[in-house]
Length: 122
Image 1: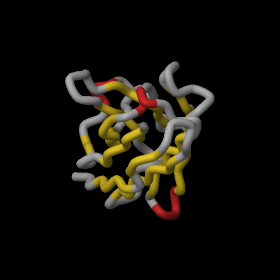
Image 2: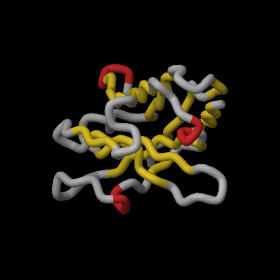
Image 3: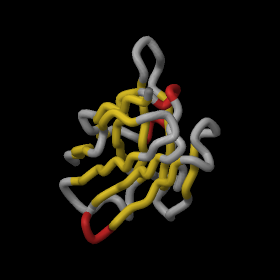
């Protein structure tokens, strides 16, 4: 059972920057899929960025070039650096993790979730 705690959310201006952090209760970042998801009111949850078990990074097309995902294994911490923020980025952001049996990170792979941190861009 992995506990994840997000922090760093807040309100920023359009074009601004914000960094989110996710601290895991145990050392899983290097062995599991790790990712960021977001959900806006009345919209479905969507994947934002992820790091698979071998370090491969992927981004949603809507954030590619603006967001950067990274991890600090020693601190069991995952980060999401967000720049050039847009109003459409407003959402609750969630950190998630899960074990990958085949090296790919499917939506169903993520079975541990944080409680979320709100990001509001206006």
